[in-house]
Each structure stands twice: as structure tokens, then as C-alpha cells.
Length: 119
Image (tube, rainbow, N blue to C red; front, side, top):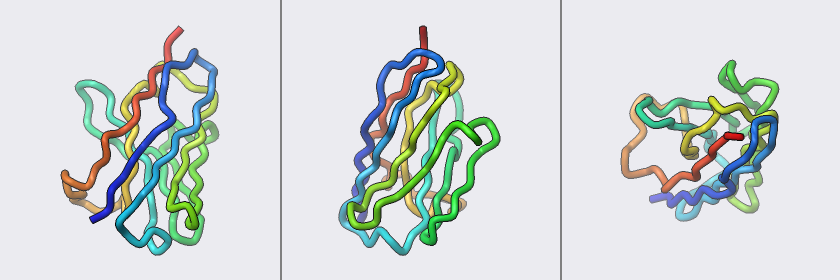
């Protein structure tokens, strides 16, 4: 079973930047696609960005051009560089493998990292 540890969140002003990290252990890392998700209070968790095992990336429209997902297979780490942050980006951010699975096991999530964008 993979263990996921997200970090790098914090409080940032609108227009600022943060870099999130997600370290995966206990599982093969490089064969999987990985994704970043976020969940705001009272809302469903949503997929933000995906990176395939070949390095191709995809983003939801609201973050396209502002966020960059990347991965380091040797470190078993996936990153999310977030630029030009907006208050609507405020949420707890999570990573997971195979992000397009229709039913991601509830027990597979890490603790997440909180991002708050506010002046």
C-alpha cells in the first residue's frame, strides 16, 4: 500500500506562488500517472492536474497556465508549482496515483496540505 505525504502549503497573498510536494512510499512510482486534487470546504474533491508516466501533463481549465505539475521518479515525488494564486485556489491539496480511476480508494489518500490565498 502506498503512503502519500503532501507538503508545501501555507498562507499566501493573491498573485503569490507556492510549490507543493508529494512523496510516495511503499509502492512502485514510475509506472503510474499521478495527479493533484483539491477540496475546498463544502465542495467535492476535484482533479487539478495530471502527469502521465511519460511526462505528459493536463490541467483543469481554471488553473491552466498558472500551475505546473512535474515528477521526479528517483525521489518518488510529484510537485505542483502554483503561480498567480487566486482566492478561489484556497483548498486542501492532495496527490494520488492513477488519478483518472473512477473510484479511488478512500484509504489511499494522504493528509493533504492546506493552501490559503488571502490578503
